[in-house]
Length: 295
Image (cartoon, rainbow, N blue to C red):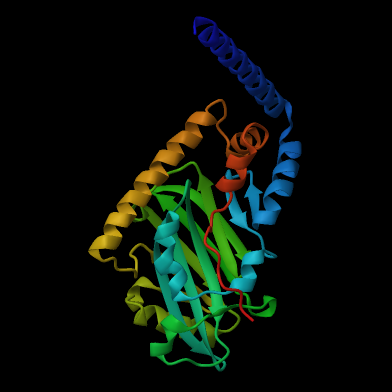
């Protein structure tokens, strides 16, 4: 019996020192890379997930040519999101323009171990009645219909992201940062193709609960702030949200602890890629639930 425990202890000791040596080797490897090489490797790794890294801000954003574009949007995605550890405020804005009902939606909140925000632009193939909005699968807009999107995301008054692009789904995610949606403030600026389209969007904002004096319209460009959510939770859902956020906070702390030799997300992620590949793959599934592909 004593011999068994002695051998078991020696085996554990061997694997402990082996793991310690491997960890130190990976830390040295990451630290010896130049930033250009790190960015090249990381972009190759995260491109299949639909994201790109912005080193100047240490955040992630969505690419234009992502697989998520084929799945469109419907209200069910938001209602189911909290069951996949995505706790966010959302603001859907519907408006009619050139024979179609358009949907421009904003999100801000916690996506697993990421604090982030999104703006998505979609449309139906015809003008819908308001009662049809929640049951319609909207299509992502085509390249020729994409507006110029930009937003700044603040957490408790401190800016954590500033992104802009002509896009159908503009995002920004800060990894390892935990937030309640109420902690976040988003300032959005959208430039539409025409003045009439911008005016139709402003009307949609008013129908969504905005006062006109809170909206700034300059020719084709509309600027406004997003603070309050359009989502309402029942008692059971609120409990689920609390549990999901507790889990999110826990995994944020685990992520920061495991990657504590580093400060930047690019270093932390490359370290996990070499040290714990399975954790790396799970970490980058920001939008986790699968959507029904549009026909």
